[in-house]
Amino acid sequence: MNKFLKTGLILLSIGSIFVGCSSDKDTALGNEVVEIDFLGWGGIEEKDLIDRIIAEFETQNPNIDITFEIPADYWPKLQTRIAGGNAPDVFYLGFPEFKEYHEQGVLLNMDEYITDLDLSDFYETGIDAFSGEDGAIYGMAKDWGTYVFYYNKALFEQAGIKSPAEYVAEENWNMNTMLQVAKEIQAASSAEFGVVVEPNRWKAFVGDDWVDENKNVDVTSTQFAEDLQFMADLWLKEGVAPNVEDLTTLGASDRFSQGNTAMYMSGRWMAIKLDAVEGLDWDVVPMPVARENDKYTWVDSVCLSVIKNTEHPQEAMLFIKFYVDEWAQAEMARSGLGIPVRKSVADSEAFLSGMEGINNSAHVVYDASTLPVFDNWSSIWKELDLAFTDVFNGKITAQEGASLAQEAIDQIKD
Image (cartoon, rainbow, N blue to C red; front, top):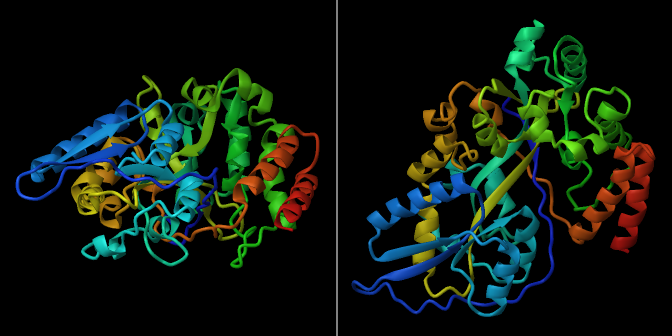
C-alpha cells in the first residue's frame, strides 16, 4: 500500500452545553474503591469488547470499578448530565462533537497524565484530531476507520474479469479504472449495479484542498466540481450505481450483502457486519486514486474524553491509557470493529489477520494529514449538503451546486 496516502479529518460543531462535574464521592485512598462512570454507544459487538477490556482493567486495578452504559439517547443524556452537574467521568466524542465540547471548556487537558505514553506509536491523525488549538490533547482516539471499497469476490470470479485487488497489485486502481470495472461486472454478472455509493459520503471523492491552511473554505475550484460530478454521474450518467431514489427502497449495505451490487464504498465499521452475512464472499481494497498520484480517503474516529471537573482524573486517565495500550488495542483489532490507534498493533497479526480471508491492511493509513477545523462548520455543512442534494438528484450540475454553496458560505462568514 502506498505510504503517502492522504486522509481528511473534519471536526464538526453542535449546540452549546454547560459545564458540570461527576458526582462520584469515593476516593482512591487506601482500600476504598473508586467508581468511574463511562458513557458510550455501539451495538452488541462494541458492548462485548468494552466489557472484556473493563474486566481485565479491573483485575489489574481492583480499587477501580468502571460502570459502562450505552443509553438509547446518547447525546441528550450526555448533555443533560453535564448541565445537571452529574457528568460521566469518561465518555465518547466523535468529530461532530469534539470541537464544540472542547470550546465550551468541559474537557480535561490530558497532557500531564500521558507523559508516560509513547505518542510516536500513535497515528498523528488521531492525535491531531482531538487536540486543541493550544496543542494540548483533550481526547484519546479509541479506534478509527477509513473509507474503502468492498467487493463481492464470487461475482468477479463468476464473471471471469479482473478484481479490484488485481488492479491494486498493478498500481492501476484509480477512479477511471473503478468506473470501467463497474461497467464490466454489471454487464457480465448477476449484479444489478456495479457499485453502490451513498451520496452523503461525497467527502471521500473530493480531496482535502477545499480548506486551506488559514481555514478558508472554497469549493469553487474546477477540480472540486469535477470530482463531485464524477461521483454523481455514477448513477446520473453512467448508470452503474443505484440513484438516490433507489437507495430509499433498498439501502447500500443491503444491496451489497444481497449481491445486488458488486462493489460498495464504506468504512471499516462495515467489515464486521459483512462478515456476519452467511454465504457472502467478499474482500476489500483501498479507495481508488482520485487524481494522479494522489491517494485520498476519509477518516472517521471516536475519542475517549474526561470531564474537566471529574473528582478522579488519575483513575479515569489510567483507564483510558489502558484502553489505548497494546493489549486492549489488540482485542479491538481482533474484534473487527476498527483500526488500532497504535501503529505497532495495526502492523501486528492481531489486526492484519484479525478478520480471516480479507485484506485487512487495505484499511490502514501509514501517513495521514488532517483537514483544518474552521468556524461555523455546522452551518457551512448544512449549506453544502443542501446544495449537493440537488446535484445528486440531477437538478443542477456540481459546478452550479458548488457555486450556490459558496455564496451561502460567504454570507455565513461575513
